[in-house]
Length: 372
Image 1 (cartoon, rainbow, N blue to C red):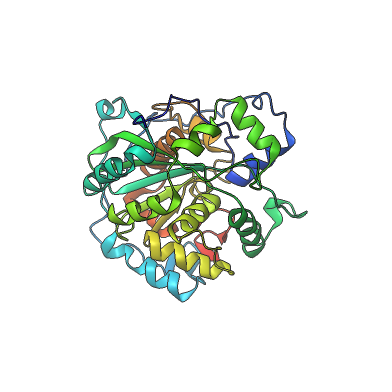
Image 2: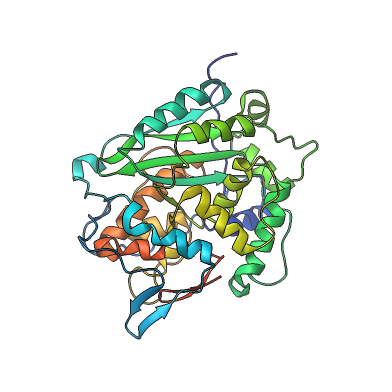
C-alpha cells in the first residue's frame, strides 16, 4: 500500500455553522458551491493573524461568580462543568504575541491516512508542550435529521437533541487539527481521513455527498486508505491530546466535539442529556474548551460579529494561511488564526477563558451568564 493515496480535492461545505452549512448543502444544488458572501468591513488596527496575549499575573475570575457591569452573575452549569472550569486558574497554558514574520510563515496541511497515522500522532504528541492550543474542524456526510423550530429559537437541549440524532447515525469523514502556542503557529496542520463510510449502505444526505464528490472528495480512497476509528482513538490517547491541560477550540463546535466524542468513546451513542455530553467533553478535552463562533458574539459593538468562519475571518482581516476553503485541515488552521486575532483585540489579559465550556447552540448566554 502506498504511504498516501493519490491527492484528492477537499470537500465542500458552507462556511457557516456546521449545522447550517449542512442544511444549505441539502437545499442547494449538488453541482456548484453557494455564491460567495460579501466581506464585512475590516476592523481598524492590525490585520492578519496574531497570537493570544500573555495571561495576567492574577488568577482569572472564578467561573462560579463572574463580575459584570451589573454585579456578579452566577453560573448555572452542571457541577461537573463548574469543577472542570475551576482548573483554568492553574492548568490553562500561557501565550505570547506572534511576530509579523512568524504570522507570514508558510504552513503545510498534511493528510493523514491509515499508513501514516502512528507517525503523525507521535509528531503531534511531541509538539504539544510547545503548541498547547488545538483548533479543530470536522467534515461529515450532511445531516439527516432536523426539527421545524428555527435554529436560533431552539433551546440548548433541543439543539443537542438534533446533534445527537445525526451524530449517532452518521460517520466522521475528516478531522483537521491545527496547533499553536507561545512559539507561534505550528508549521504543520493535520487532516485525518477516516474509513468506514459507504454511501451504498450508510445514512447520509444524498445532495451533501454529491456536492462533496463534485468538489473532489474521493470516497473510494477513504474506504481503501482511511483511518479506522478505533485505531485513531487509541493513537489519540497515546498522543496526550486528552491530557486535560490543552486549550481546544472549534468554530460552531457542537458537531465537531460531538463527532470526536463519539469516535473516542468507541462509536457509542452520545450521552442522552446535554449535561451528560458537556461533562463528557470536559472529561476528554479538559476545562479550556472554546467556541470561536460563540466568542464572535462578544467582539466589537452592535452584537458582535455574525456569520460563518469565512465571514468572521474577513471582518477581522485574517487570511487563510494554507490550503483551500471547505477542507478540514485548512479550516482548522483558519479557526486557529481567527481565535488568536479575536483574543488579541477583544479579550485582553486572557479573559477569553471565562467563556470556556460555552459551545455555540448548546448554551444560552447573557453577558457571561450561561445556562445549559
